[in-house]
Image (cartoon, helix red, strand yellow):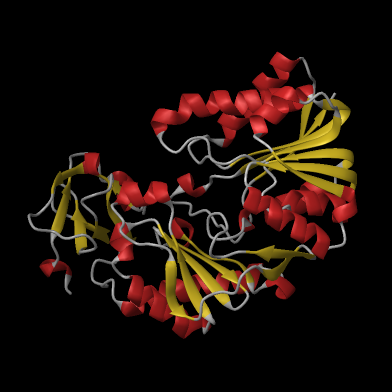
Length: 396
């Protein structure tokens, strides 16, 4: 469809600059005029108040992000060739950056980081796990699925949904098989020379947290002695600390019985079960009630801030968790502390840890500041995609 025939979304005065700079999110507050009778997923042309064409995108009336932008060449439609090219580019980058022996395991598409706002694709050997966080893009679920089958020939594609995003976007998708055969019950993948059994159907998010790949290995270099892993999920930090570090024993806790079952299976699979213990517990209560001191503590909690309205509450939670962890560390211990709340900036998180150190009367030296793995690239035009923070700290 030519640009002239597309419905035009008109921006308010002095609100166009971020979109000329290729930021992909057009919030409702930046829009002056929306044509009548637009439907979710309809292709539109975003124009300045003066009528100058900026970019093509997809419309969603049910989201605060009313338009997601994808193409800044106004004469190039968002057709099958366009989506094929974007997916091909994302796949080619992973072949370049992922270790050859692990190329079948990783994040193939990272939403805005790959110019595909609202789409996440993880690869688990012969299966793909797909998640849509945009209702507008989800209207093309069949096209995206067909293109992934064409480009990758997987055994199957499984759709995962996230409750919070479903509500925010007006999504009506449900978990299930999109193409091919369903994934088997827990099957094995490899990362950092460690084998993991994962569950694509019931596991958290898309099935595995690839974003911590390098951080798990980096943290292991510093961890020794008796270690506590808080919110261990399927055992990633625990197993790396035991296999690649000097940890002698790890106590790993999580509130999810299903996650702990996977963690125990993973410890058995790698011959490490005698050097770790997995316990179901509320993480905060455990930290509040524990009396033991540790040589190393890993904090990898779930997202605390989902909206800007929850930022203050999230900051208080991170402060409390880190203060409690510091109180349980031996002098000379190592704190590995993480935040996956994108609304908490790297600077904010540094200040939180600094405040926790001050309140706990502990000397904290930051050894490494780390982020998400490279298969979670950050678009220079959308720095909000930089969500993961990981600090490795020496504590006296």
